[in-house]
View 1: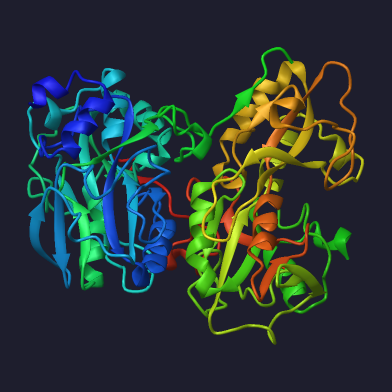
View 2: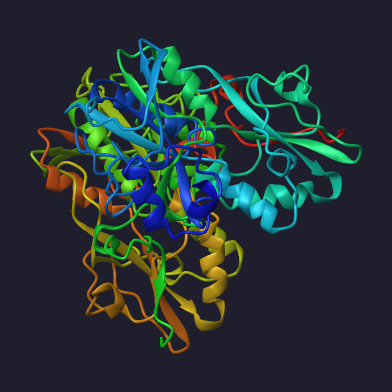
Length: 285
Length: 285
């Protein structure tokens, strides 16, 4: 089904996900639209989690927050029902993974708040379009991720080390890769570090904490971006009675264009499904 | 005193403000550091206000949020006490201005949350440095502000039209002004509109809703930026029992460099008062 959906417009992809017909990863689907990590939690924790994201915008770029108890995530898309429109969900209880499901209608609570956070797919597409090859994608592996020595700025029960992802970039294209990814603050923005992994407290590139090891060939530099696993670690640390996330790689595909300057749909735009709040101008001025 | 403080380092400016010796506007003070609008409210309203800012990032660029009840705004500066470090405060009760004070130590509540929002000073400095003159500054006037026809995206009790500020820019420098201000997402970013004011539902440029009218000479284009009065209007609409803001023009001067990519100080950096969470790199790599 993946090969079919890959060439379908967003509306068809979303319909297949909503109907439970497609429950797999979303890489390469709904091209051109922002994909997002998901975290759903009781309102009692929501202000602290939002402060955590605000204080750590590179690992936790907030792109949407639902109203309390409302599963329609109106600022991410005209008709997104957050209970059905993600291919697969992880359920955490007391900070531990308690199961995975493809629909959370029966788990939804009136006090739930849903958070959508930007992910690395966006800048990876832009790097590839600029002709910068990404080994993990070309070789169908998961990007290597490392627990760095950098503490995030805590908020309430949310805390932990910043997790970073690593991509090996040709020496003469590092500056370009930095500038390209800087354009996408909703997708972790510019790298947090490049060069010697020791600068981040990472001792062995060959042993990532998550994902697969990748080669760093001669003439390449390891470049590290803040990673969306960081909030995942913070959610586990908070040990909430219940918390629901997307299953890694199984993202929410939004109606927000990938290159949006600001992360929201305006209500008056939502029927079009493709516009954003950005600048307008009168060319006849 | 303003003329003296204008040439003093940030630490001296802040000490004078904290001691109640300086209670006037902060334009041009503490050069190079981000200045911010302030909104303090009971925690019961904080999640909705934070959602409002997240959904309207151009008029409401959130640069810092305090922990509940803690007046030390650690992510804005090493030693910022939000009760004393703003030159003057406005007190609102039930959505109406109830008075102005220079210190809020006796008004502080255990459930207060303080929000700092970026302001236009930052991009105005950058425009001036690029040689783009700003008439209202050169003529010691307040920038003209207009209630546009654009609805902000509401959150809980917070809602209202987007307020915009207008600066007349020479036709051949509009594109440059757009690009310069786009670099400062914490200071409203790129304009929301340029050219015909009717595009924003504004009928008469000569009659701003706030501030002073300014001329738009032949060969100049009116350029409109999202304005920090927008959250002010939303705060009034919410009609909270108590809410405290800065007095217009009397801003919080933070320890965050004006050109910071992300709006926070990391705890480990705070003793230096001048570093930010940004990228690092190893030049020996």
